[in-house]
Image 1 (cartoon, rainbow, N blue to C red):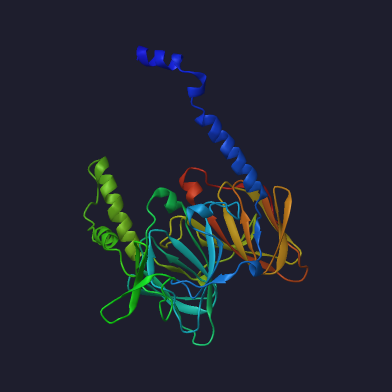
Image 2: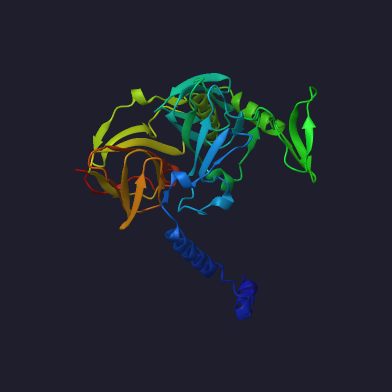
Length: 370
C-alpha cells in the first residue's frame, strides 16, 4: 500500500483523472438541453408510419437508447399510437418490455400466450413482459386506435429482445438490395444482406429461456433460508403473470374527487394486472377550471382526449388541444388549465413507476383544485 501511495504522489498533473468533473459538466449540459426541449407534441406534426409490426404507427418518443431526450425531456417513457384497420390485426410479436395500451376508439380483442382478452374504447390493456401478443380489431367497418407506452429502460439494462413472429403486412417486402428468405411453401419470411440476416419467428434461445421460466412449479410455501426466498420470488412471479388480468375495463373503475381534481385511477400498484412499471389514470377538468398543483420526481405524459387548454410547468405555459401529447419532466411543478369555458377537458395520463422502485415515489401536493 505504501508503494501505491507513493506512485499516486509522483503522478504528473496531466495524468490525473478528471472523470468526476467531466461527469458533472456532462450532466449540466444535459440539464440545459432538457430545458430547451418542447413539452407538447402536436398531433398533426407527427407522421404515421407503416412497419412489419403495425399497419400504421405514430411515434412521439422512441424506445431506442439513441432516442433518449432527442425530442422530449423524457427518458423512461416511450410513446406511440397505433391503428388497426377494420377487421385487421397487428404483427404478432414478443419482447421483454412491458407495454400499456389505452383504447382511444374501437373494440376488439387481444391474444396473449394463446389466451383471449376482449377490449373496447376507454379500456386499458396490458402486455406483460415475455408475452406473445397480437391485437385484433373486431369491427369490420371502423378502425381501432390505441395510445400506448413501452419502457426504454430495458435497453440500458441489457435485456432488450424483440421477436417478430408474424408481420402485419399482407405481403412481406424485403428491404432494397436484400435477398429474400423463403419457407418450404415459398412464402417470404425474412432477408439476407451484407452478412446480416433478419428472420421472422421465435428466437430459439429466447424461447428456451421463457419455456424454462414458465414451467417453474410452485412448491415452496415457507422459505427455510434467504436463498429460498429468491427461489420463491421467481415462482410467485410466474404464477402471478399466468393468472393476472390483462385488461382494465373503464366501466369497472370509479371516479374519485381528489385534491388534484376528478380522476379515474385505471392502473396503480394495487391494480390486479400484469404491469410493474407504469401507472395510468384519466382526468377531467370542468369548463374554465383547473386542476390542483403538485410535483413528483416520476416522469409523466398525457394524451388530450377532449378539449383545449394549457399546462404551466415551473412557471412556463404550454398550450394544448385535443389529440396533442404533453410531457412533464422530473420534479416539474405543474398544473392543468381548461381554456374552454363551455366544454370539459379530458386526458389519459401515463406515469413512470421506475422512480418509485428506486425510492423516489410519492407526490408533493402544492395547491388544491377548486
